[in-house]
Amino acid sequence: MNDHSQDISENDDKVANVAALEQRVTAAFGRINTALGALGNGDDTELAELSSALEEERAKTLNLEDRLQQMQSRQAGAMQELEDRVIGFGKRSAEQQTELANLREVCNRLRENNNQLRDSNAAGGGDVSLINSGLQAEIDMLRAQMQADRVELDAILAELRPAISAAQPAADSQGAE
Image 1 (tube, rainbow, N blue to C red):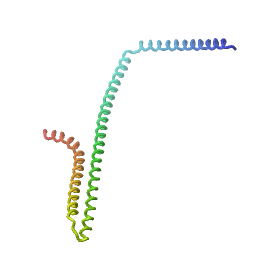
Image 2: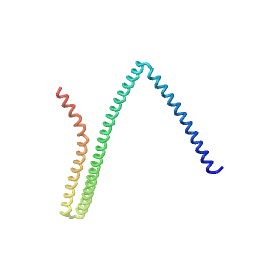
Image 3: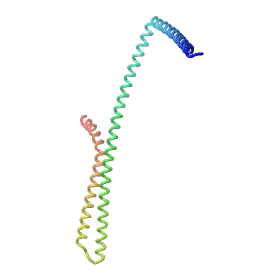
């Protein structure tokens, strides 16, 4: 078979397929028209009941969608609040770590100075500069401890503020009653 004959044969097959599809589509339209005619002749009360039920379901669906949207909104707010708290914890933790490192450094200096002072006293001479640096190291340690305590108190207050804020409206409403 040559190429031209093969092309004609393929075209004939395509035309036959199109004709078969056209017959199937025509039959489907016929069935659709029959079904539509049956619906038009159906019971009006049944159609009204079905329409009413459909409207009820649509209303329920809208209600559920609204509730879902509200829940998602609350969840997004709660997630944002938690993320903010985690960021706050991270910042406070970094501050506490810094203050703790400062406190350790001051304590190490105080320990070294005290060792030198002890060695100087054991050798029989009290070095005034060692005593002064020891006292200064102790003052620095106390300041570092106070700063560490301040950071810790700030962290505690940051945790308590949301609870206090939440409890305040409840206390105000109970006092009004």
